[in-house]
Amino acid sequence: MTLINANPTVYETPTAGPRVARDHELDEDVADEFDAQEIFDLIRNINDPEHPLTLEQLNVAQIDHISVDTPRQHVVVRFTPTIPHCSMATLIGLCIRVRLLRALPARFKVDVLVREGTHQSEKAVNKQLNDKERVAAALENNNLLEVVNQCLATAMVA
Image (cartoon, rainbow, N blue to C red; front, side, top):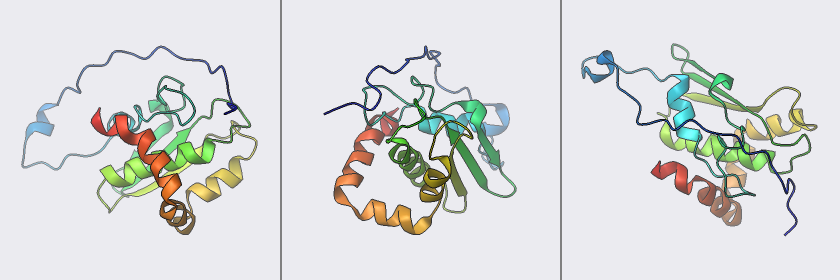
């Protein structure tokens, strides 16, 4: 198999311990709101489809590129492919979308986007990733679903 990006840059990741709950998060009578850190924690350990590295290690997923609008129940994740012509960008975005759809309450709208100016086919990739029918069709493909599940395997445990 020929690798698209045979020698990616690997970034040092902070050795973050478990998230420390804040006082109001421990109160069962108060509804917890999702924040960018919580969304990042859900996607940071997704495996890259091409390398035995996580999206965090490749700097594909970054907390600064996640926004959560709790009143509107809207999450936007912008990710950065490792190279501008990455053919895995759609698959990576699909993995992010599936992880969030499986983890977040159904009331949330999730948008997954390639960061502006980071991919030569940015508009086409974004259109595919945010078209419900295309995503549903992709997930009906057993081979593709198996690849997505392999990428998510460690993320689900972490």
